[in-house]
Image (tube, rainbow over all chains, first blue to last red; front, side, top):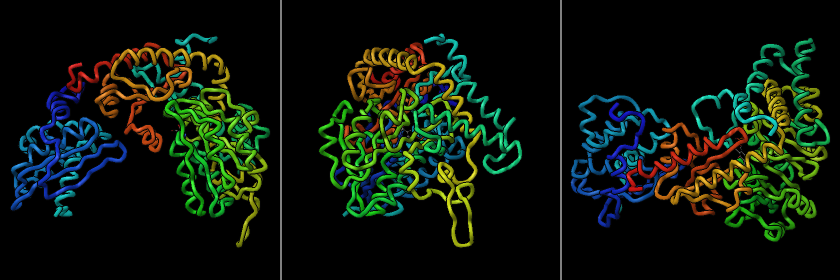
Length: 147
Length: 406
Ligand SMILES: Cc1ncc(COP(=O)(O)O)c(C=O)c1O
């Protein structure tokens, strides 16, 4: 385990929570979807700007626990600039990391988002970590394109 | 208190461990006598109560019915037939909603609930109302959780058939003047249902003195086992109500086309009952009586005051509800500025401090108070000031652990 189970709230996580890069409005977004965890009160609105199947920009707004907010922020770090298919592949790795197992190489592909691996030991928080990713997937699958 | 706190804590196996357990409003810890009682039932008396005609089944039945009598006496009911065993307060309230409310409500009737209610004392009424074309009205409280007599009178209407009110709020800890509200309700000709889940464990509750029509509570919040709860109902109402669940044990005779139902209380206890749980609950009540409500109240008030003092030392903490600790009955629901309650409780958990985080099954209340979600520490007589110190100290580290400068 990379961070002594003693505290899960390491610097990377708290930095993304307190000083998120991607928590802002995105007026020229062409995709938008709200994701909620009704039980926790985590609530985000994810917005992406996708051109020719490339995620050229993205942002989120909302409230929730540090894990849900930091996870959404780290996700955007990772997927902005990537092709939609590639981002979906990463989203698959992320959810396998949390629900099951992944290889060390796969974890490296997730960059900072890989720090959430240990959340699998905290079943009540899995949903928090998944919120951003689940919303992203929902958005791509249902094609929530805004006009 | 007659007995020393160290001695009392030694009665609770889980309290001898490393946890600071501050979530008694969710469920209380259990003394050894209660744990032993469940075991003893299965070791010595186990048979299906109320069915077998052999000695062992008679013994099982005796333990079960003696427990009913213990509960009757504890809440001052007129007769043991008015005590119905259920699984928990939620089931007790549903029983009244399905059996009483749904057979009584007419289109356009109204049910009055307060904004303080736990979902368990709201959703059953909403469901009953929807099915009958009736309506649920909300009675709001002030910022301290108080409901005034004027507001109450103003909310009651000609069409109010039933009022559902908690005696103690599981979020704000405040106590409603049940006796007065029940009396006003009766003037109006409506029935009064009290949720005693948070009161029965902490203060003496006497149903005849309060003159409520129904009272619901759970064994597991008052030192008893999980899976046993109580519904008290006035006999004249229970007698006229149709059964709630149908099946074995609640009948007199059954033919191919119909059945006649058993007398109270068995009419409302379909299927094999939780006799071991009832027996355990009777031992929990005996334990509470031995400590005594005076001592319980005194100790819980002292602890609540201390917890207020310690939490108020933290400038980022805001406690919901009354400013006066005496109004809180051991319940401290708070917010820590800038930190989501789930993160608060996860970080407290790292120090083995157990508190509840979330909406406490009272979403309409939190929405009304404009707080999305909160952390709750709830105390019982078996807690100590050291445990509160652990809470205050761990709470003091939370913001820094989340990257704030202080
Ligand atoms: C005020 C109140 N009412 C009802 C309940 C429901 O109790 P139970 O879950 O045991 O049915 C609770 C407990 O959570 C409560 O605090």
